[in-house]
Length: 236
Image (cartoon, rainbow, N blue to C red; front, side, top):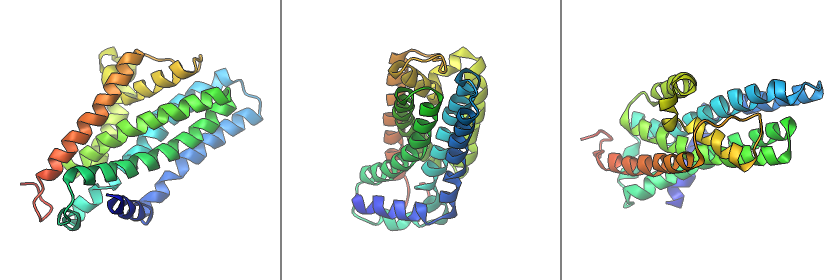
């Protein structure tokens, strides 16, 4: 299991895809730093930067890039056969891949969100955003890893979920928020450190329970889906 995780991490950072992880964190911290340097009131920029860019774009996009990359490329080029021939339970393969995806996504999102939250308000808000982003990384990574096993266009479907379901419907159609990972993250951060910069639209129990369902449900489905792959890397 640790060998699979190591190979996955090495392959992920050995591709150009890893370079796509840098611009958004730098942009988030840069914007927060500029606003703080020019004494712009946090009430004027905090929500657009922390939520609009950080939680609604940085966290899900980074998770999408990493979550679809840890296994999707192996499915596409057929090299997954090398993993499937190993005497490893499919559960261990998925957990190893998911662990790498969550770890990379969480660090890439949590660090800049902590810095931006600190610049906007306080260390407390920064920590709240960091903790919430780790929870979000688990849910997003589980979802996007599953998509890489269900379709050959996981990035496209992931973008539809981020932009349409969360970005459009999640903001204007209240019934869709219960299936919005972004809303879970906002709620968790707001409950840890209440602030006017964050506006939670689902309750904490809903955020915790539904977040757990995303993680566990998608992970179990991913294991079951991987079991359906034949030795040629095709689904039977």
